[in-house]
Length: 143
Image (cartoon, rainbow, N blue to C red; front, side, top):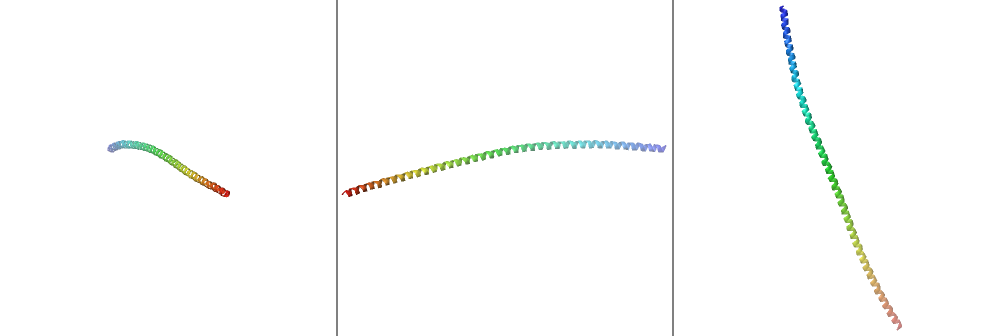
């Protein structure tokens, strides 16, 4: 009986140790559950922060895209204004050249007309001299 009592005592001690082990395992599982839950919560918060950062980044990209579009529109307007200015300068130069050429043509016409007038005057003078010469010749031959 003493052996049985000793076996019962050992069985009771083993049962007690097994129950303690199970309790420790249960506590360990609880601690691990808490840690895992905290890690998951922390991971979700980090993901949420990353999502917000991505959203901000997308908004910044959208703003930059709009700024680029505005810049391109401004450059386009400036180019168009520059082209229009060049066209106006070319028109003004053409007009200036046209006026200059017209003035030169007018001056040439006046010069030609003056020259023609002088030639006509010279022709009349020569004609008058010829007429006078013929009159003198005619009066000399009558004499």
